[in-house]
Image 1 (cartoon, one colour):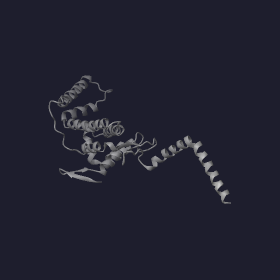
Image 2 (cartoon, rainbow, N blue to C red):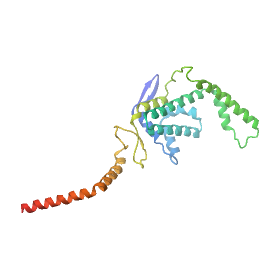
Image 3 (cartoon, rainbow, N blue to C red):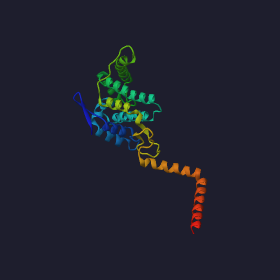
Image 4 (cartoon, rainbow, N blue to C red):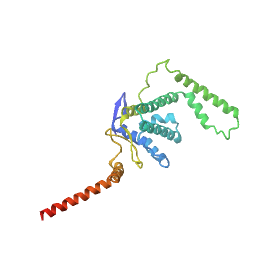
Length: 243
């Protein structure tokens, strides 16, 4: 797996980044989603060790985080314009940076953790629950106060992370993103090697080529049969002249 070193940290680069993006964006829906997501997390610890604190330590939280990013990546690939594609990339980077900031707010983390542990169907002390809910609100307010008044304070870009570098690279690769036109393709999202590429592989292109040939033949059948008859007659005439 190719990687580079910056500031003492090793980062994925080049083909390794493309491979990760393709595995992530092509994650299937159920029933294979959970097992494939677990393999993705296992194979790229440098990425998911960063994401884990944001998603929570429970497996369900990590899975939701993985799926949320996958959905945004698919929106990048399916974006109809450069502007739309760049917006989805920006949102991924922005959401990650915001969650990273929130993950450092220990008061908010503890309040949310306590709130997740409350079973609303069994709780007896409603007043205690409402107090806990208000505590979450106060902790969250501190965070949102920092981000809502944009434009007044110019905030420097966050420090580089594996995830941010991943999406920044995707922005640069944006015009190569393609959705394979074979409706039965099991991994339809790919990076094109040429601007006119419509299919991810020759195997996916074959059915479309056959269908195009069939439509052409249906449209030109009469004319082609006429040319074949004329060709046979010409051949027969030549043979008679030679004999």
